[in-house]
Image (cartoon, rainbow, N blue to C red; front, side, top):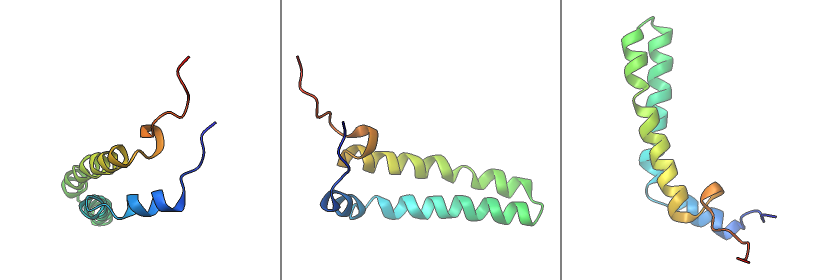
Length: 79
């Protein structure tokens, strides 16, 4: 049974400096796709999609460094 993360762990994760470029890249990707689709510009929309994987990678790096979600250390004892 996994315990939910404490407030201190969540705040420590949110203080990571890598979250700033991750949020900017995600915002640029979503904004670019929305702009491209609203102006019938497929090239802009597809180009903006290239920002999304980099944002997801940065979020994954932060999660792995902080041990959040599936990257959390196991609390089970070995037999």
